[in-house]
Length: 160
Length: 104
Image 1 (cartoon, rainbow over the protein chains, first blue to last red):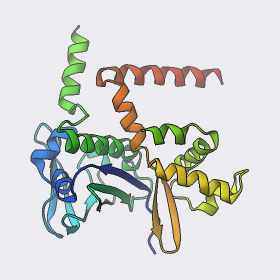
Image 2 (tube, one colour):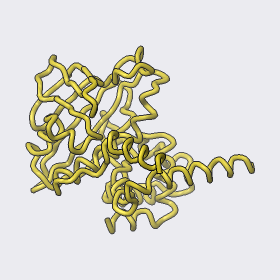
Image 3 (tube, helix red, strand yellow):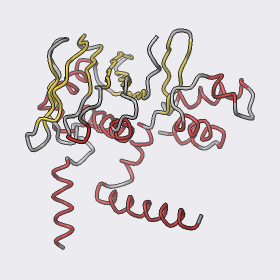
């Protein structure tokens, strides 16, 4: 049996699994709540999930391990940032379970490389993405400012 | 949100969350091992935490693993902490930590 997962997150969203699935895989939607990232994850197993940041730079090009819309999606996780290169990819799995008129979305992140640097970043990242996703799907508004907005704000503050 | 505040308003339950933060994915037995609480009491507290979605569980074989789920706490923070306050609060919190470490 594999090692137990390192992170398991759950969020309840007042929307159908189909709608949540679309929000997780359609780049036109992810860019509105996922720190401005465009995440295209609608491929089949064996194809790639690609993610670009708000400047258009490709930051993920990860193999899709399993895709069973709108219930289960799993891809390898290996950000293409220089200081994280050389790590064995970890694995992210999304499970969508309908509960009356809601969806229970579970994220399981596991199979980290030993001494992984990504590991520490994850624990801050997913809760922010998930609350923003929930807010966006339910109200049409994401929560997080994109990195770009945040950078612009800081620049304005520094100039003042 | 009431469930979250009620669940957090108990020192034993916060202790359980601290333990999961230190080591995620523990079983009931592991959580009971170093606690001065009966298994029944721990089990009851975990049910309250799970009900508030502060603890997520998953089964692996015969074991039920417990995970700290900070998503509801994040939602609370998002509600009352504006995005423009965030970096200032972070700076204050860093400063507090740095000063406290120096006094040790």
